[in-house]
Length: 459
Image (cartoon, rainbow, N blue to C red; front, side, top):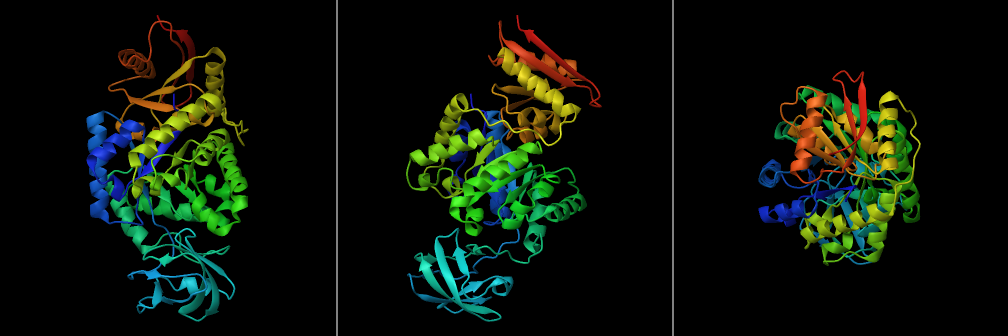
């Protein structure tokens, strides 16, 4: 029984259909396509492979588009080998073979002498010795090579950039037409960022698309409550947070963000360096396994692996091991209880259903015609599987990343009662429900004015 979900990142290591199929069979619940790399043609190819696997395997794997966002990167160049104490010149735009191009002037506007600059998630660290309008001289502290298109962060500082770039605007046109289920918004600093994104989505004819905010900056951490009020969930992106905060502070920040999301009854996912060692080796480390246990105890809906599956040598093994570890953690660790900020009637009923199921040792069977009905059940972290009948594939894919939710499409149900009856029939045929099974059933009227809750034993 695995309750927390697994998001994987597509990339060169997953470009073969057989690999994607094996990853889904091993437990991948969602695929993330990172818009920072590749182009619409490549993204479409990934989507085609995922959709093909969904159809052939009879599953509803979620498709997630991750916007590049307002990030400053190194420009296009052949790469440069560096060594500690070496002096390097960064320059806006094009640069000669001895200089390193940067793609935005805002980088130089943010710099001051003595600042610490981190490239490629800290693989190269430099200090600033001199700054001019469109160039800067830096000295290497650690690292061995600067590569093109890698992110550049000034430790403890944020760039003055718009919420969405021109590239994001173009990518959103592709995303809204290609059939993605979620959007991840990168470098979210405040609620306005999400409001701008939602306006663009509305203009593109996708006003109801679900948005997950990646929390990666100091302002994102400071403004977490107002951000949570306007998003559908968050991703705790520890890699970029580690560029701005002392590493010893990251566990505390991680816990704060997870608790904030759970107080607001919003999904929360943990990302970056989940099984990073598996980029090069077929086994995770003991520390990485303990890290997953900690995430389960803090109550995340799921985990997002990035380089492990996009460029790693063992993408299938990553999913297999993560699924195995989560399943074992779900048996031994219960998520910490977090008291919601507000409990309306819908939330109180959902919590009551979860507590009732746990008190009598029952599974939860529900029929839901909308996203929030199932989201609220997942929010209270049930310790047993939740089987939710839904009217269409799109809703099934949305629910596929939420804690404990197993969404099953029920066709032609004209009422909640018909939906529950069809669910029972499907669960029986799948061998999940049989004589003696104890279930707590939940259904809502179309206008959400009436909830029907039943505890019954199947004969």
